[in-house]
Length: 331
Image (cartoon, rainbow, N blue to C red; front, side):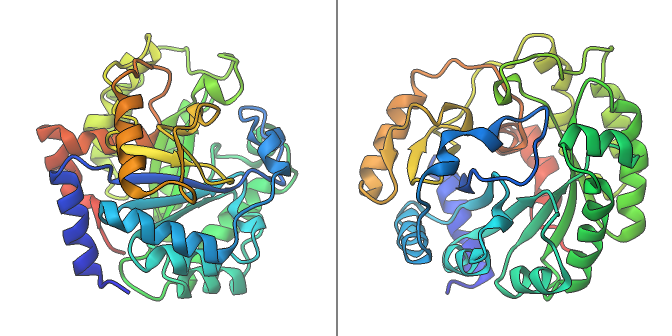
C-alpha cells in the first residue's frame, strides 16, 4: 500500500499533468430510501450484477496508472454492500477512498469496519434541522435521528487523525434557513459541514431548486464564522450564478469522472447513460483519451455539485489557495 505521503505526491503529479484527480465510483444503485429529490433508487442499474472486491482491486490498480485520485464511493446507498470495507481497502491501496451515506446502516461495528479499512472521510446526508421535513423528503421515518447517530458513531470509530466525518446538506427550495443550525449541530459533535445545490438531473424536475433570493453571500458569511464549514468560499460564491442559469466551462472528463456500478465510465454521474469506456475492459490510456475526447464536446451547465465545483477550484488560483488548508484537514 502506498503511504499517505506517496499518495499526496502522486495526486499532485496527476493534477499538475492535467489528469483527473477525482473519481465518483457508484458501488451500487440500490437504496433503502425513497428520496423525493433523487430518483437513483429506481435506476435500472440497481438490478444489474455488481462488481466483486477483486474487480474493484483490479480497477483501482488500473486507475493508479493515471496517478492517485480521490475516489468517492457512493450510490445508491453504499453500505448496502456488506463487503464495503473490503472495497475501501482495495481502493485505498493506491487512492484516497471517501464515502457518502444516508447513515441508516451505520452501527458501532460497521463504523469501526469502514474506519479500520482506511476510509479517508465519510459524509452523512442531513438536509434539515428538524426530523419531520428530513424524513419526509428522504422517504424514511427515523432517517434524521439515525443520521445524527451515524455521525456520532463514525466520529467515535476513527482510527487516524486524517479520517474526517462530514455532514453533507443539499441546498433545496425550503432549507436555507436550516443550514446554520445544522452547521452548529455538526460542530457540537466534532463533525465538519459541506453543502451543494440540488441538481435537476437527479429527477428531471426543477421543483426542488432554491428559488427564494440570493444565497452566495449568506453562505460565504456563514462559512467565515464557522471553522467546521469546509466548503470552499470560492465554490460558494458561484451558487447564485448556477441557480441563475448555470456555470459554463465544466471540466467533467478532464478533472473528474464517474464509474457506475457496472464499471462503465462517463465524464460525470449525470451522463452515465453515455459511457465512453469501461474500467474492466479498457486500458488506462484508452480511458484517458476517450474521457478527453468526450470532455472536448461538453457544454453542460446543469450542476454545481461538490464533485464539480470543489474540484474545479483546484484549477483556479484563488480557489486553489483557499482549498489547500482544508483538502487534507484532519480532526
